[in-house]
Amino acid sequence: MVYEQFQKAVKDSLEERLGSGYCLSFQTVTKNNGLTLDGICIGKAQEHTAPAIYLQTFYDTYKKGKPLPQILDEIMELYETHHLPEDSFIEELHSEIPLTDRIIFRLINESANRSLLLDLPHLSFPDLDLSLIFCLSLNKSDDQLLTALIHNSHQKLWNLSTEDLYLAAISNTPRLFPARINSLMDVIKEITMKASDTEIKEEDWAGLFEPSPLSPPMYVLTNTFGAHGAACMFYEGILKDFAENTDGDLIILPSSIHEVLIIPYSSQISYEELAQTVFSINQEEVAMEDRLSNHIYHYSKSQDHLSIAFTSSFPIGTMNP
Image (cartoon, rainbow, N blue to C red; front, side):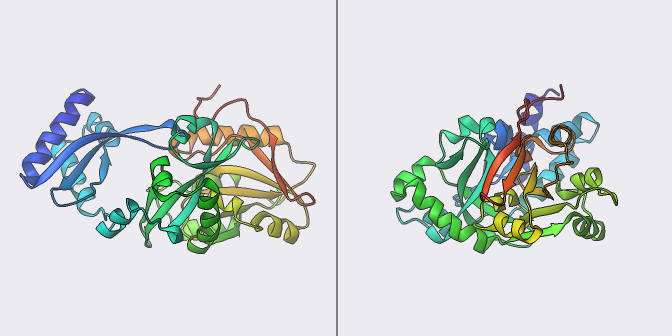
């Protein structure tokens, strides 16, 4: 079956399994860095929301020989274990009264998301090729994080300026998602103890940046949840305090939207070599929607200022040259 036939077969089979009380539809979802995914939404008539289950990965396994009934079983299991936000959260999301205590920010690449940013209130940092976008944190548990992206329509409904959103987010994000900085060696040990093949996190970087006795120390900056932790760079005082503790400037490697690597500055370090390593890992190890940047960043302790130290000529969506 070609992809379109596969989509129809999945929808028809699921409708037959679920019965008349369910409504199924296809939806194309735009993700980070311009990635678009085809999803099938499965919802009950009385529900206000429906999860979108992306089909491309299932189609890839089908082409490799996995039977369609087995794929349908996996989709059903994914749907049945998916936790939707409570209806009260959905109602409040569309209320004229904003949930200011739940507004948080996330960090994304600016040049790779220009189309997306047209519909999102955001704080632009063009000199860094980065932007802060805003979300509502709906629910947070040990195994799931539910958020809702804040669009221009929400901002207009709530009558909040971008500065208002930022002031709420700069207070809420560190409170709801505290930053953590650990040595790369400690992270490697933690990953070794509870390794998982189902998520792309620091392990992809750990194997390639595993330090030797002669290499500079490396640290991982993320949040306690381990998701969208690169935004911690913009927590007030986080880089300044760490630079004070290490008594020098910092080099920052954007490993993904979930975390960054920090290296104490040394004149012996080649920015160009680091940039090539970052680019290679982004292409080979990091999923498109999780990439943050190919640039290398420098934090000046004396000026309390973050800047691009080496500019990559390749945007984060390009293939290897």
